[in-house]
Image (cartoon, rainbow, N blue to C red):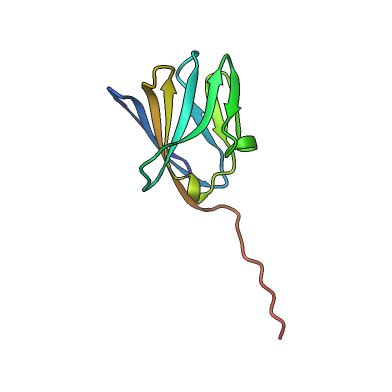
Length: 119
């Protein structure tokens, strides 16, 4: 399930996205210049670094490591979990907001329970 809406504001583009557990999140950077991506968890006050992108090279924060990949103008965070819910903000080199994506992670897809009775 993917639900995406887009709005423009003086603080850059703002989008809302609802993705299923385990799906990847793709963030458009809307810039060819150096940017950073920060994450503000739902219900938390402080933002955390996700990665820096410069010259097409993505440098992930150690907390995200192999889950972050990218190409020119897009960063992907793989295998979303419920702790990935919140806001992802793309900032330029002057810390001005280029875009923000508000992410909601919904129920697991393809997840099932395995249970065997020993009667």
